[in-house]
Length: 249
Length: 295
Image 1 (tube, rainbow over the protein chains, first blue to last red):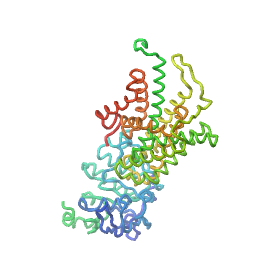
Image 2 (cartoon, each protein chain N blue to C red):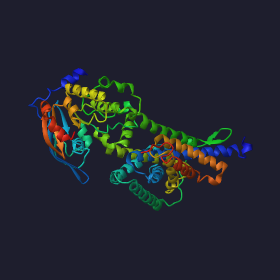
Image 3 (cartoon, chains in turn red, cyan):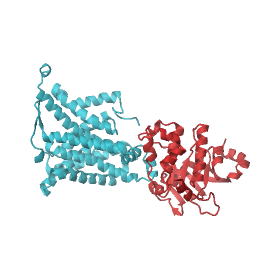
Image 4 (cartoon, chains in turn green, cyan):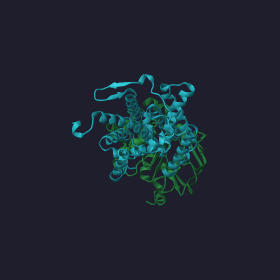
């Protein structure tokens, strides 16, 4: 299993690599309200990139637009060079993207095992269930529990674990640390670093830039449906004041 | 004991049997309604009309194609299921995001149209459909006479209900169905073609109704109104069991059939209203139904 992952791994953040995901002039609407006003950003294979911003800035809508969950969208979303902006979400998922929603989306009428095995394989080379249990040992002990009987942290692990099985190489994670205890946040951070080491590409939405700084290569700042700033991981310490200002913390 | 109660064992067991038979149809129809409501969010008022269509497909297949009872058990659900999927694709699909009332009105209208067409073509009186020769006759159990065909109906419908329950609650396909009932958007974002799944589920739900129609044909005769006579009681069963609960529909269907039968023995005056009285009480005490979950 591990050999498999190692073979798939790409050199982290190789500057010359073509973007895995390229978002250009993305607009999106919920009904009449215009939420995204021309988002532009990209992610190269093997990178961990965050979208930082306040509540309501459009971070979640960006993930949902990439995933095809927001139906009304214009602009261009290229995944591995292929246009996905007009596709239904099931077609987009089959290209090799996987989404972990902010509310986690654990199904109450399914037990933990069923939740874990629910997402179909979209590409070969997904993580084995044993490796997922190695990352999240708690899940193994609670396989027969009802999905929503898990603690918040366990539900988050289940929500991340189940999309690792699918073979998707680009993971869209919406605030995986929200509402969790510091020790669980550390565990999730360690998991994300391990996933990066194994070659996964991750687009992370966060409000907690302290957490984001421990895992990400680059950060985009989102305000009112637009990318307004961009930092390398190395720049974050000297930009703390600017970031605090953006995020209102 | 029977002398004390002032009833004959023949009457008691006879009514119990009728109750079980009715319960079998309640269970199969409310099961389909529950599956459809769970995933499509539509109260399928044309379920009775599709049950009637199942019986008519069997009748017409026999009259015009010489196709007997056993092949009709397959053919009628397939034909009616395909008709249902066509309805879903062309009409119901547009209503999922609207209030329940729109789906209810549309399917109620469809039921009237379908029944009207059959009534125009075949009149309102029942058409006979014979019991298949292999199941004619019956068994003398000592305390009562059990017609073979009725025993078969109970066994077959119980088998179909349990198989449906197993598929939904214990298989991967059922896990997709349960998950899509809770959060179709996320299930689709995992790569599952949820719109196609919805079409197939509606097809399956109405195929169950058509199967019940074929099973009913030799017992109740084939008539354009056989569905509307039954469907009101079936909706009461669904309300009592809890909208969208699979096991609830099966258990409630059979139980209420038996309750109705027993009421015919002990207090015949109430036999046609007892289910609605129970429904009223359940609604007052547990508005989500006996097996329902609050949404």
